Length: 575
Image (cartoon, rainbow, N blue to C red):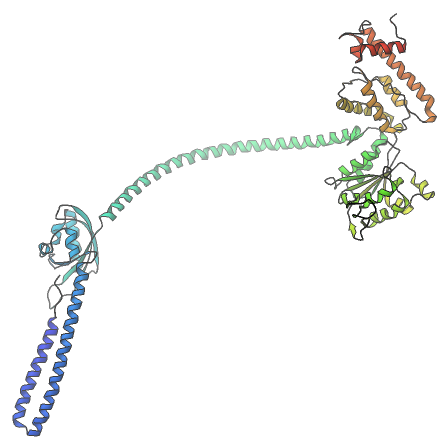
């Protein structure tokens, strides 16, 4: 492209001004010949003014020429060192101008590129067609046009070129020229080609994967259908199983209830009608928070009944705290029940939490309540009524939520008459009384209790007692049992310890009340006879052999010398 010069329009303007000034000067000279001296003087002054104006115009033109030269220099630098190649193409496709970047891009000197058709640098016929169509569109004034073709450098290398062209307006009626920028896009095309190849590979893999997924989906659909059918069958089977399970559970619950009521209500063993009524009363009151009063002789199992009530109540997740009022000294019962602060009395070196606080939201079992001193009964009545108390040595009131279960073996009505028990406390405790029958009133439970205790002490002691003779059971049933179940348990424990072999042998003398001493002697005599008979049976089975693995001593679980001593004591001799 040619460097910029002073335009023809500016030159014509200067020539026009000069001609006008010269003509004006000639006109003035003609006028001078006809004018007077004064007029001449005026004209001279006017000419001086015009001369100054001309000098000013000349200075302005010189300054404009300098600015134009400076602008042309800057334009030439921008043009030559632009980051893309600039080409000026005439209407016939010949290169009229090119910047340094464009010449370097093609590897050809600028002078060799002038008047050379740009299409000659294309390597392929298809690219030449594209380029011809590109310039045709530009000449038809279709605006800025872009195309991409391959161009060849002087050294023979080929690169991808991006052309952007625009038509420049005609000047003085001449054909217009085209300004074209050319950029090397080889790197971009390589990336695009690589991406196209990668996309093609991805499309192929996606297609293959899609076909595979379609096949898998079809197979899964078949499996789902099969599973649905299997689930339908399973649901039917599950419904049947659930029905049978519910039925089994209902039957199991029913059987457990029957067994519990017949043989074992928690730790309460028996099936007598008297005990059955106790079970009924326990089931009635256990779910409530009502105060329960257990009445019965010593050893009848009042503590066991209390635990059964607690374990069937809504408080079973909390503790049941027991206070044996007969086992605590009178001066300690208050601090045990209500607690004490440090220094409340001499010797109280630390704070103590009382049983009522420990039983908060649980159950408090007051065993043998009839033994409680009168001075504490008032404070106990307040706790039962209001649920609040104070520790010893503290004015702070403590509120608790405790269920009370009390028990006694005394006749509290007689105690009230004697002034040893508060009547109002009795009525507070006697909300739901349960009387536990003594063992002599439920003798049909004795065989079950004996079996239970034998199994219990077999496990505890390590014995293997398997049988209890009818004679021993009869003797136990005929006994009066003043100590009730506790006495029976102690006798069975001793018998398990002293028995040899697999049969239970009871050698104890039952401690009856004075009214049944004669009956005790008869029972003891019967038991001695049973032991003698048992030894005789063992000797006869072994042919009167005492020692050895098959001897009577081994069968009875005795030492041979012990057996001989028993035989001498009982007067047992081989006939």
